[in-house]
Length: 217
Image (cartoon, rainbow, N blue to C red; front, side, top):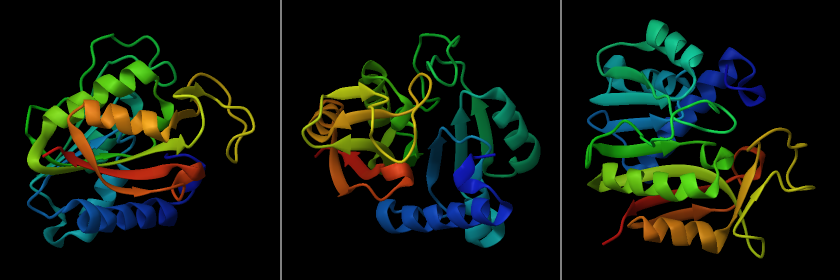
């Protein structure tokens, strides 16, 4: 579970703990945080939280995904005090094409201290990106941070699906790779009421870039 980048148990756990440490350093994650793992899959990040924090728990880890099989596995194997999982039946052309049109991230306003979305916006259309950034902004607490990855470049169209000759893979099927012009993505962030706290270009999976976002002042 987790694709070729997490092909064995050691990599699955090691990368999870690495990302938890990055959330500590870049987004202020602590054992007292309310953490929303959006696009959680089988709960890789939850494993990292349980491995990293004393007493193997957190105030609230909430994993959310559109894939029921993965959520079922996570519920059966990772549910514990402070850890919960929600399957949302919302539409995504790649992962849940028959889903409902209503968008949700399954979070109340101002209820999330740290929001994590790894390789989620890299598989999302432009309209959904704009709408979900607004939902993330609403969900963040006043001092909250969002840690997200996506493909962004300079001098490209605002949004493209499966751009030919781009990146290390041959993109196949709907929304395998969605790429934004950096200026366009950051305009969507600003329009959602957030600001860029940190940007690191091209160092994440398959050449994605990292954004840490915060509520705009």
